[in-house]
Image (cartoon, rainbow, N blue to C red; front, side, top):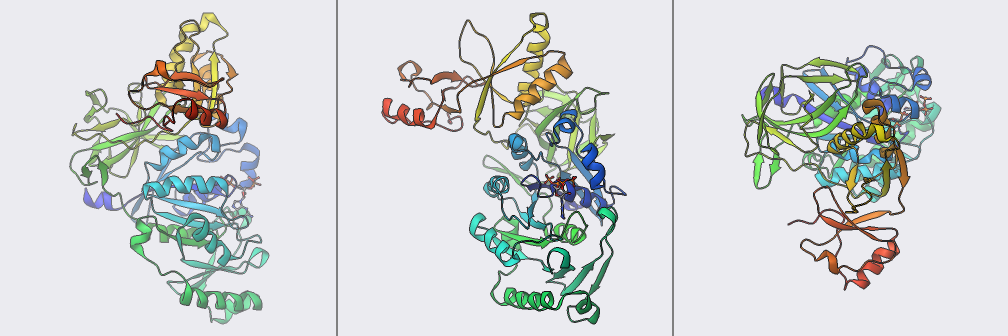
Length: 525
Ligand code: G4P
């Protein structure tokens, strides 16, 4: 079991939309031997469907809504690559995926540097201490000065940056990278649309064939910059990398396959296998004999032919065996795990065994919710899934009274899955659910799924609130004074809070209520 766990590497790729996350995912699969021919970019333009991009809504909107797990074996490693939705409206889903990984690869468009979404996702990783590897993408086009990009990592994200390799030339004169630790040059050749592995020539910086391929000025510049990095740059510190305080940086072009293999090899070598997880005071090591894991994502209707529901479980300790019986900690019930699957884009295959670090998809358990623990040791209960304050609110109406049952059943199921949050206004006349989300596209997913899976069309009425804040625990709700436009509401756990239409009303609320503290997240106790 220990050997199996040690060879696991479980990670996700994060980026600002358009930086090249999808392209890099495809290319990692190509180099990992998981697909023979990377879905060509032109084909993708037409269908906008890649190996990891499948849902109807995603195809319609050309965005990645949900995420899946891609597993492959490479050089003795078992790699689990967890795909994350690219659109900012689904950042809550992405945040949850980030609780299930042991490292991330952050893709940056080297012409643009750090963008808004990269920053947000980086923050989530930093808070969790997740190791971060950086890929400076699109070096085949004019980029910003590489030293400047490193500076930005340090000044904007506050993370030390160690360039593992260094670009030789830029834009049309980009020829390859210099590997600073191996002290070797990798010269790349373009292949048609980057569909095949790019041929690589390896040599030292001084070799004539290297000098011949590079423009004189690019050559001298690289030599100078490399010298400077050796003298004044950050030193590689494995400890810091493992704690997310230093990021190894790679340069390349995902579209052209440049630097993809170097990234994959170095990432696998330098990242860690699954690490212990904390449960309150307890530390659960991955090699603990008891099986344990938590649900970080629920997805339905992955394949219209099945129309089923899959709970994705990140295994944190022990070994999974098909048909094993575990405790579902939230309900205390014993559950037999009969149908576990390994997902690969649209493909699925039955899993007989899996180890800490792996992700399995459990089919058909409607009782499982996001954050639930499954374990053979009922004393383990993970608290891994954070909640995020919603920023958009809308009433969901059922325009068709004949579909009342389907509507209610669908809404209940989607809420349990954590697709959106719901608030109760305790209004005895109007029993219309008030949905809350981080991004408005989450509402579209609800409407789309209600109709396609439950046959219940719905209409949406946007509400003008832009924030919900929890009241302190134990407060006398009746004594709370509300500014105009605010409204009392209760979360799914029955905890009270206030819906606010503006930042100004939040401030005024404080004045009206003697500076009463409000909470972004449910208060403890
Ligand atoms: P995302 O998942 O992060 O949103 O990015 P995605 O991979 O979809 O890439 C965004 C765009 O950037 C795509 O172009 C893609 O072809 C391009 N791209 C990715 N890697 C590189 C690279 O190394 N060099 C260059 N020059 N471009 C790259 P698009 O025009 O938006 O899409 P498509 O029409 O090419 O599919």
